[in-house]
Image (cartoon, rainbow, N blue to C red):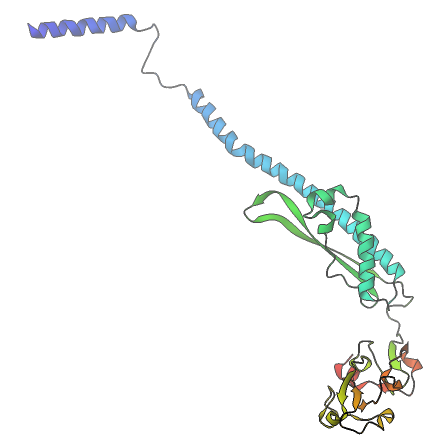
Length: 282
């Protein structure tokens, strides 16, 4: 009795299921493949699009760098040429570099690319390391171009540009020149550099009683100058220099004055080369 009742219930359930089933409905069919393809395309686009966008951003960044570098190089070339035109081989290197920097700054003052893409703008371009020694004008510009996107601590790339020009000195590169030397009115030697220690008077005052134990920087003793003949007491004050060999009785002594003259080496006949300059091999 119980079994037949259960069978009847199952029969009615199956009957209801058949009535409710839609025509052409086949639950055993698989999901259409187009659905998987759409999902695959979406995933690939999500991965590739940022890479493609980043690639084009850096291509544009490369052209910006080329624009900035071309403007810096043009300003460097202009500055070096103008400095070479106005300079001579004997100009002060510091003054000449300062002049070149003024020319360079004025040349890039209107550059929007440099203001936008260089860290610090036009003042972020440094000319430190530029030289104007001898017959050449060697300018060096160093600056940092900002990256469009920072990578960890890297937010830009450093670029260095150079420009070299020869000064208009009227000399041929292969021509033997007559170098300039320096001498004083009372000196018996000439010097190769104006910065020679023997030309630099560092005057000190000491007591006459200290003269016997005092030595100059070359280790030599001090001897009396003609103006110190009356300075023979212990409390008398005399004057010495770092590289001199005499002590002087008054500051107004002519030997304590240094009037440095500049002339060609061929014009100082009768004078020998300074031992300090010779020892330094200059």
